[in-house]
Length: 319
Image 1 (cartoon, rainbow, N blue to C red):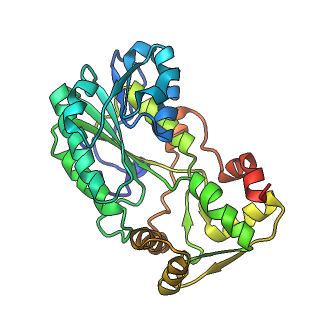
Image 2 (image 1 turned 90 degrees about the horizontal axis):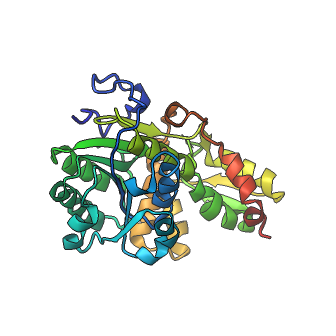
Image 3 (image 1 turned 120 degrees about the horizontal axis):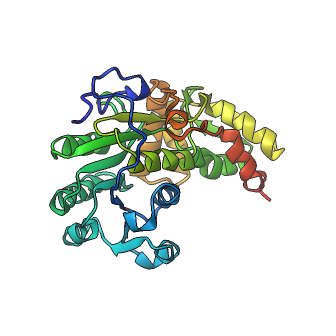
């Protein structure tokens, strides 16, 4: 049974009757991790292998050679491609639980997710764990949300057990992609107007996913997976200046002006719309859920974004 609030901001605070405390006992379950060459999936596999033997893990990828280290450890590595749906049932065969990592190509990824869900049913998968997004809500203006909502619908209609991991804003995005060029320019310009989000390490999301995949009692549950604190991009800019030792200002502008800045920088139309709509959604409060999910499921607190900045000090400093 799936949580009736699967798209809402319920997470750790949902009072639905299906949100009972999970059973931490380990069952003999074979886990299938799809999109296994990606960063989140690989990290999830490493955490899962701390809890279950390699023979209970199947990793599915378009590039099996990229997972040689896991194969050498005894993990089953199989070829599977979301765009070749005929390849997926055999790739998922023998699995009980499937980690379905949301893909990146807006619009097309709904078809890819549908192919994976149909293949999971054909292969006898009983439980899908889907990496959703903290902002998933029908009223959210972010352009990445509709694909997630449609995927939720497909999963809810599948007849399979489902767990939704509504991952927060990845801390790696501002630290490694947004802040370094802003520091080089001396200013970060956006349209978020000091709105805040609970930025979470991708590795913490992976640890939560591994816990859900390797223990029972998570069926029908929705988890909001967040970092430990709410921070604005102005806060992030100040932290980055401190860590890098370089001055950097923060400036928020309206959506139209920010769109013009991005257009001048040569950002493609679809990407530009995604970036601008993210700021609009953040201003509306869709990034603000703050939960204890990481600590409650993994036993350790989520790591602050300052830790990630320290790890990437040279990148931020332009060294």
